[in-house]
Length: 311
View (cartoon, rainbow, N blue to C red):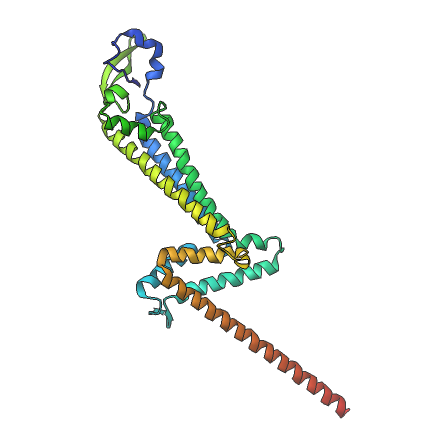
């Protein structure tokens, strides 16, 4: 069944409409559920890309955010039960980050040195790429909405809102008409006859409000996404925001910023403090191990000399 809109205030309903019948057909209203489903699926693509690839360096961003929120709720110094042990709330976050650092150091040592710079900034590049995907998704959705709903307006939502503000009704503009003409095929013996009847599409009253809300929501989200993308690009890659050493290891900075966004500065400072304490403990352990190795070598050397003197 084909549906078309005629402005009966300026056009006499006669069969002169056959010449431009196709240009007056409404192609979108029966596809509204599918358009909404497509929009939802498009928004899932950047999230799916992020969830699929963000853990490749060993970082579990979701688990880190959850642990950071627990730390924020309980307090960084609050002691929690973990099995038979008691740990500070901020400790799991720092332990996971410490593990990831060691894991990537091992991978950089084991594999080609050309690969290691990629892994140091992998999460940072992926995070910014997913934000770029979100921006591209919003731009694509604007194109889809303009194509299906109102090709006569470059900015469909603003055009429809302007019509509503100036009292231009649907019967004049043709946007989401409530009354249309429908072509119906009626089968008779040996023939299929096309009849044109008047249809009432009250669902378009709701469709108009739904898509107008979606259009302006996309506009707001698009502006915020563009600003956020620019902000992350600047703080991640501009030399004035990152020292040369940190620029080669941006993933750690990105993760700490994500923790700060989710749980606040106090939690982040506790995580950094725990990381520093772990680093000092590792340094002391390595230093004591070196001293023990030197002592063993001295003992072995002394035994060897005594053996030679005895002979």
